[in-house]
Image (cartoon, rainbow, N blue to C red; front, top):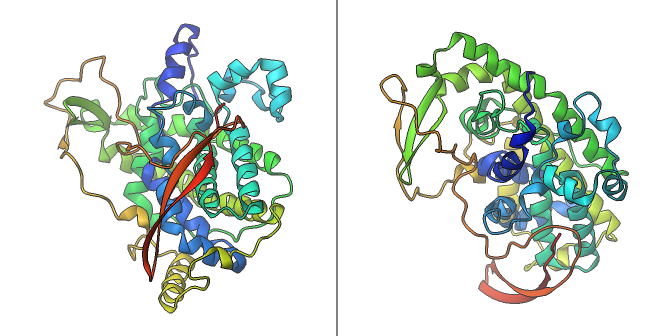
Length: 403
């Protein structure tokens, strides 16, 4: 893996880092949905009843990035900033020890995802302890998001988009373009959830694994670049009045042959840790009976049949082929993208143009609140639930957190 670390670029890179999402909306929603299938029966009926809400809210952290300046660092940790030789030996795993060694401002600048995951798990534990349905849904969704972020190799490096190695656009290619294009070839039949005795250690192991994949992530792209001409390698799109460049489908196909197994492996592993942390929070929160928290309290015949169908497809690894992923149910596009398949007859876009965010265009989430270290303040959140009796709107106080 070749790198060029330029100190003068660090400030700009930190700002730019906030524009890159992980997995895209498609990947995040797929991970959240599959995690529901991996839960034990004592939790599954409740989570399945609220699966559509959890899947929708799993992208809330990305949706609020533009409005919340404290959000971006919660999605990554640039380990190579601390050391290229032994970053995991030099970085303390405990947050308080890490701040003593590197200062809180440094951690915020180069990412805090491992500690945000633990914070979300603790918030979810308390929500279970309080039997707070609204917060169980919210923190389950957001915990899913941050855990999924930790599974992306490019969320562990300063060179997060290949921008330092003349491979800009690699982030979106790895975690959005490949999963969306090749989801039918990937395996989503993960392992059942298990109680996690040491969540922080488990999270750090995931981050270390992600960091270990960086070499292949960059090198495989470099090998293709040597044999594929630029006019075939890139494609241009005009959207929202801007012309942007991204890797072509031809490049994506070639890159999939080199790293597709890695992307598949990380996409398959993320739901297992998500569901395991949900289970851990539920057990640590006193194992509350989730049945009385549903209205009606027992799954209907239709729900049972629908869940059975989806579980069977999940075990057979045919969810995408059977069109059962909620992420496949895309909303209508606001604006059509006029894409040019070849870059041969088109000049490169102006230097000031930026790559499109890997995730789809964000829309503010009504009930989303920043997830961070506790600094409580109350605010009212509206929630709308549906049952056979009809729709019902309720208001509930929620704790707003700030880093």
